[in-house]
Image (cartoon, rainbow, N blue to C red; front, side, top):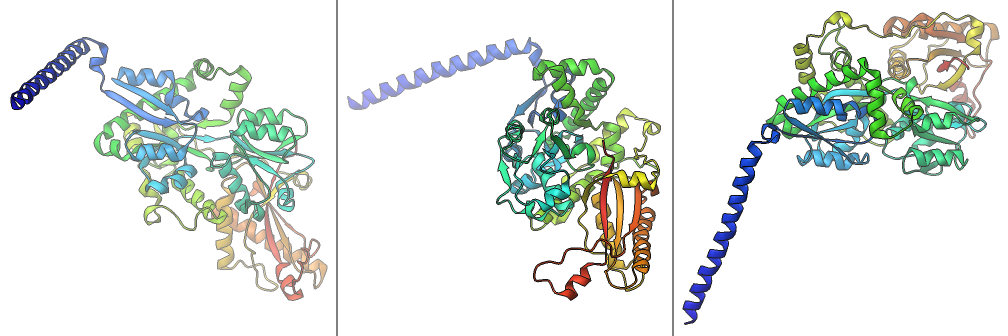
Length: 512
């Protein structure tokens, strides 16, 4: 009897399951039939991109971009993650995202943890005033004052592009105490928090991004120490395609880039549409929108092909500024102490970039090469008095340029040091270069001044001839032994005398 009961119960359960499965199949069949009559039936799928609210990413996720992709049968979903780069790259690594955006420095730093889950396929924009180091002028008039004032408090958001700007300042201008995050840092939750601390005078300086940069500069007494509008190849935003989409559906990358560059051109040609669309999404007023847009420089297809990836040569020589930016960022990390060596496989930047897609889109759109103009800053010739009126921005970090006694001939090591210095100068294309030559205090003062001038001239000639720096951008000045260094505590006289002969590279700018 018990056996019959179990058998009957089993049949009952099977029957119920059969009914449930039948219902599910019926519903699915009905849904699929309805689906085939909707516009969704023509959908080819969804493209997901991990982003944050930086204005540079706006065209990528804009209404125009979404409409263009929809017309191609794809839905575009931009997933906001509050600039959590580690989480974003982990999602890309697991295939939860097709693509992601990031600054070059953040991808290098955070991507190492997941062995670089994607490939850089396009440069989206470059920060041009979107990030800046500002200070109370009575506390920190210049970057050199920051070097001397080791107790100055600085507010900034860690692991942000502004953080990278601060690291670059520490490395390029040799501000050693900024590399030791002990007494000076005031960590904040975003730029607005850092701004409030600056306005309340809880800190002497702050690293902000737009629109907070403009808000700070509107306050009397606050001034700009260094902004990304004065830099080049420092904070660069890129589009990263995940390994899965690279492997399985590379044609989608080509399609997305094609529609993106069309979108970018549309907004460039229709500025009112750009302003309206930004306002509709950000809900900001006109002044704030203007500040946001002023801080970003979008990079179109022409810039990508000619300048960043070098898929098309300009004047016979391909430029590959993306590779230069990657190498420069790694050097900043290593010098700052954030890394001990390059995290890239085989120390090869080409392992994380692909120029193929930009080259393919460029060829498809047949962009004429004659529309490209290579931008080169034009410096006017200045009088000696005008050079004296320039404001010192900061002294570049450079190992001593050592001349043989009584000579002005550069050694091979000197030239290598100047090559390194020039790679730093490239980040600051708007500043002029003042070269100061110094000798020891011993000997004839007139002869020393002549010798120091000859040595400064030798450095200037090398930079102009080897690195094509315009003559009107450089001023060489010899001071002889008139500006000796201070002798360090406990330093021997011999060691002190060894340090006195030197050549310094100073970045200077117009006073306003």
